[in-house]
Amino acid sequence: MLFRRRLVKEDGFYSPVIAKNIPIGIRENVKYSESVVKIFPGDRFVIYTDGLVEVFNAQGELFGKNRLLTLLAESLDLTGEKISELLIKNVIAWSGKRTNESLDDDVTVIVVDVKKT
Image (tube, rainbow, N blue to C red; front, side, top):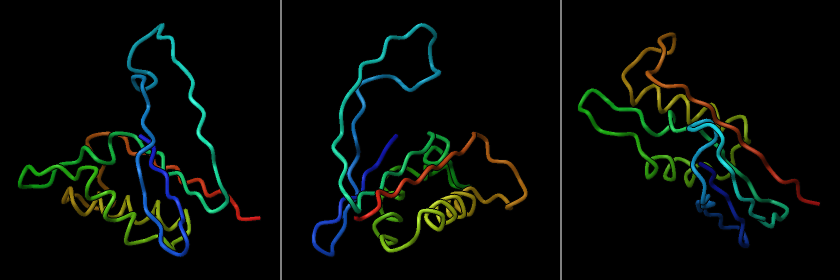
């Protein structure tokens, strides 16, 4: 999944970049279509695997995309590295596991900032 931060004036917001294909690696021999997304200085793209949002807590509640979006919205000014750390720290805390314990699924977060010129 991919979220894009757009900076409009000094306010920012995140919105999903919708893919029309199934995730890579789910099936063999799949033909994927391409799409073009215009990027602008100040944009941020947050790319992550489903393991980030499909984590359950002890009560059986899903971490989910809404919590992810809330965290992203509350941390617009953080660097990409700090965003990644924040997301993973929150997901681990949500799961109730210790930082040295493995989650049930892989978690990958990539944050790409488009430099301002």
